[in-house]
Image 1 (cartoon, rainbow, N blue to C red):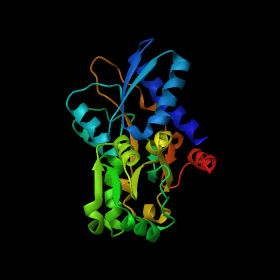
Image 2: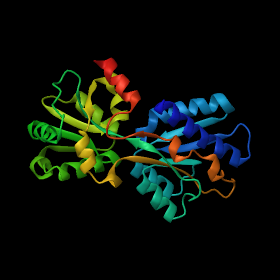
Image 3: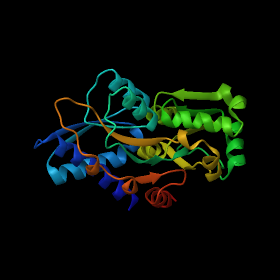
Length: 266
């Protein structure tokens, strides 16, 4: 049900922009952070089935999206981290009206398929797994910034700094783990991990709940919807966009959707 709510909420945002544009057979351009790709793709399909209008989505890390829009690229909807949306709003690159939180995506631990799964049941177990690993891989995007803060918060960053591997995005992290060897451990958005699990990686599990509780909540990877300022388009009224209660929260513990998929994996 959470997954359906997320798709329905984003579909409402699509519909709001199409109605605000006052055009039929619209083609909406959407720039989005990659962590919400499964839900956003599902929402785009529902939107097309209901309206006949096409939503074209380009995915990039949140910081890259910010640079693209700041540089003048035009889109109808921006789905990115709150920090990026706030900066774009401050510089009048996106409209302040109608912005809504879409949800949060939890960070998980991932290993190469066939590699032993480390114990991450609690903070102490996670710390031991990190100290024992030959390499710790994560990205330089939103989830990577959260992971780096987490490593500092639990007191292992300085000890493992020499074996940290930071790559451009979630897909690069997954490729590195698949092609790697030895005792390597990675972090990534749970959605990124599940998207790549048929390509040779395995989700060990979400971060221990106590590490999420101890972390700065402002650094948890999150997604916010905003519409791009365009002079040739009328924008959707805020009421047409999804309300926060309709958004899915995929926080530290996996959502019901992820739990069912974890159970099916055995």
